[in-house]
Length: 394
Ligand SMILES: CC(C)(COP(=O)(O)OP(=O)(O)OC[C@H]1O[C@@H](n2cnc3c(N)ncnc32)[C@H](O)[C@@H]1OP(=O)(O)O)[C@@H](O)C(=O)NCCC(=O)NCCS
Image (tube, rainbow, N blue to C red; front, side):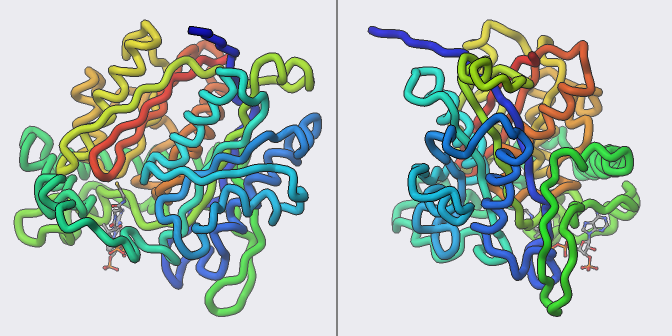
């Protein structure tokens, strides 16, 4: 078999601010395509040696591909960016990891020589298109997935608490409070400024503002305030709360990827190199456990161990999921390599945009940590999947 392999590098990664879903959200009157166009255009504007004509395809993640996120949004957005009709685009759905999978497909396309310059990204407007909106499940879907709890992500987190009772509500709240603290420190230190594309928006009341800050973080969070929160998914006996879960959010994020040769030819400086990808599937009722086999898979392909990872970006759909994943990968929940700037519990989780958001965080952290070599981005996915990518700092 012909094995062509080109080195794949990341040139840049950006995101919008993440808003809260709903009428009080900063993006209530902004469409998913416009969030997407903002990050698409920013990647070209920030990298003047790259022209939009260099982009050979736009690979776009979106979980709910109907309404404004339907109609092959990946193709629509390059035209809405006024880049003409010549840039193809497609849409990818692997639920929460749609955007990370878009990056994975971009990597595969470049590595095999099918393209030299691609943009991969993702968007989710959970305010306009709530989770599961208009989905029509197969009559056997529930039986195929185990039981009805597999459809409700909050219940899958409760299921992890049930099956692995060593991870308690107190631990989840402690983890969530620490996440909010790390996020607050990062925001105050200006770490988000370089990656957020500011966007002029109209709010529900008709006023305008510059959306350049995340809306979801709650810096005053403490273990005590978290302990008082209700458990909406299960009521009595539940452990998953609004405080130890990610939120319902709107946002977009994108990554500019190239072959190393193309980057050299254009004279742009890559920040990191793709090393390996691992995907895995598990019992959908405990979907949050899947980053473990996905990461082990990626590590095996790379010939590395978890101890080789200097920076670990794990998407926090739920605190209990992050606790489980880190523990089973042999990492302490407060390991200083993990979610150094905080994670989705603080920043929010606009599903398909979270993968590229993780890459943007890793890029920023690589820039600040000269001694770091390898980084991991990993996510769990509804319906029981995990997706992990390993990167090397250049
Ligand atoms: C958990 C969830 C249902 C909560 O939704 P919500 O009720 O709209 O959330 P809110 O932000 O209004 O928070 C609910 C309450 O908790 C409080 N709260 C939330 N986070 C808090 C924090 N960190 N500290 C203190 N209080 C907090 C809010 O102030 C609010 O209080 P109120 O009812 O007195 O106003 C929702 O965020 C959710 O479904 N998350 C999971 C998303 C998901 O499944 N994603 C896919 C993953 S695979």
